[in-house]
Length: 82
Image (cartoon, rainbow, N blue to C red):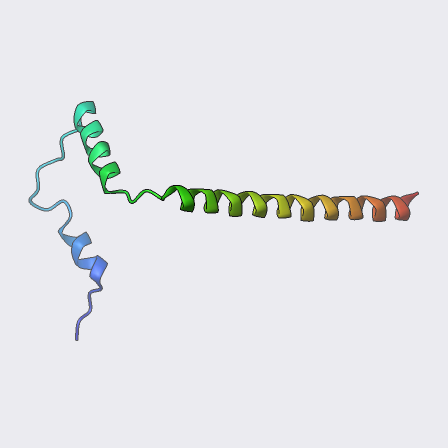
């Protein structure tokens, strides 16, 4: 029966028999960033508009809920202590 999980085998081998990593130079870092950005699947214009609209509506609803709760609690506290 196996006693190791997937992550344990990789952790045990780390650092054994490998040379220390060299620091990444800024030009190499920029090339790697550009390579990763090319892999990104960017949203279409329609998706971007949809996501933005949904986000703004959600934020406005949350502002309304929090403002309403704040106003209601303010009136309740005023009634209790006034």
